[in-house]
Length: 300
Image (tube, rainbow, N blue to C red; front, side, top):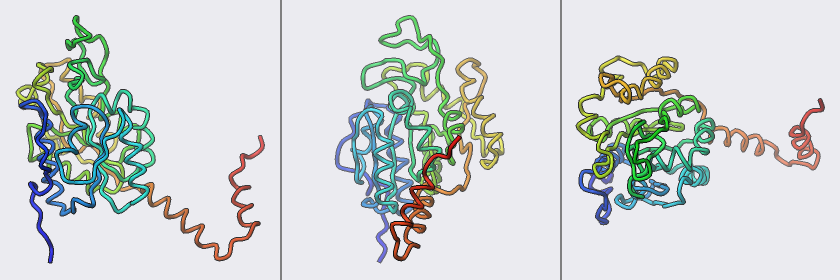
């Protein structure tokens, strides 16, 4: 008999400790809704996080979870997925964790197309350490260490992940729970590396990029603009305009699925190598030597 789980069945008994009004609350709600609709048993889910407000999300859900070092959630998640490919592996992270100290892992998890889902709760500020500028902060944003406003240009998460080779790239807004749950569901279903940037306002420190600000600006690129996620060039063009609203008050903020492609996953390639090895019924020393010789660099 199939047990039907509801979103509440994926929530733990631990009370969230986020500030009232934090966008991360609705991220948890949307994620539990996606789990329920996909009928994934909690014991088949592993959530990995780093350090930051967003990285506390796994505490508030029923699943296996690992709270890792700052910026090191992705390599741990990769290890989990390779060890047990049947698990649904989610990385809960933030803009500081993912695009600052952890940024060196992004190109490699994307180009290898490892079948995990990275959810970045992007509030454009370091909230847990009390209001420092993050990699995605807009120019001029005031912080505890930038009393005259940030002089750094922000990184573009969507453009970064597209150019790194991610096979699923999307953006959503925590003030739109229905859209967010849909995007999470599609990201988790995707076979390969999926990245979702969630515009998740910090009501305590970021008084510019608020719920009201985004609610009046977001535009669904799939529903409103008819964007086809299989069109990589168009996805890249839309991504390069993602931050226009930082400089133009009339520019919209695009949300939706920018790109999606069905490409061989890292696990597929591992299985192919395994099959080659297993095809050798009684490997000899000469067989192993051929493999070693094939790996040697050719003479110039």
